[in-house]
Image (cartoon, rainbow, N blue to C red; front, side, top):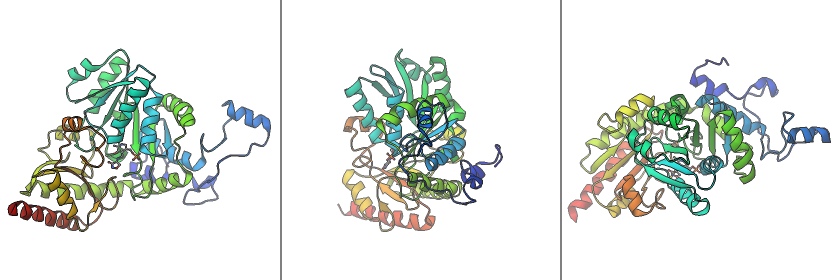
Length: 400
Ligand code: LCS
């Protein structure tokens, strides 16, 4: 593969060469916990970092390394690291780059468990944080403190789909010498590459689009070699939330079809968002591909396409939202996202239930907000199911 090959070629060929593996087209899985040293001196040299080579699978494994190299190429970073879950990746980065009494500046909305982690870091280690809307450069600057080490953000934000201008944040962070860490789970590198826009570290819940088939829980980190090596040698090695070789293999397989799948997710989501917008039972739709969406101009600048997630509010309260979800026949009521199946969930009582009510409202997660991960089924079938549930919602509200 040439260095300047296109993304669609890199997802298939980067990080693996069949030449070194008996010509095997599919990468081999190395399910081994440890690696035999030819002699004691080799062991000593590998532990001292003076000789290349594997030691023990918590410190590195050949199948996992293939995936780490592939994701680094796709994100345009120097080095990748694989973890046993997205949260293992988020916690390894946040804990690896801060010490007690440091400060993290965070986007107003984040995934519920990331919010929980920030609370825990404060309670246990006095790592403070502020959650702020990152739309106004002056507001960001006003919240930067001498001990601010990280600007952490999601864009699109789970589940409100609000966007953050990565180039703008990158420029501010560069002035203050702060690392920008971006959770790129919703976009994948196919739609958005934060490192090209001035961010320093990218995180993925690879459980989602990167795996793409709902059969693995995993996390990935990409960044510059120095920072990634630091995380590898500290929070990854000593806390140990690593990925199994089999999961790495599933993700190497999933990545091969990422562009094809993402294009279909994007096409389907665009169709569904337009339909939802027209429906009388829907109060509002939050979708980066909608020209009327408040952050549409940011989407146009930094996302290649608008993604497969849509959030929307139905007219009514929490019970109405739950009843609506219960009327689905084809769509699955499930958290997670990025799978072949269209998944529907209620953030206020599911993914973001750990966020206290007041903070949830500030993030825009109201009780009538619903999140849809638009799958790969025929778009007409997805809409048919949503439409029948919306019609039934209207009928129920008319009889009350
Ligand atoms: N970051 C984002 C943006 C996420 O959406 C999630 C999980 C994580 C990190 C954590 O990744 P995990 O440890 O689960 O691999 N988001 C979920 C969601 O929205 N529904 O279920 C899980």
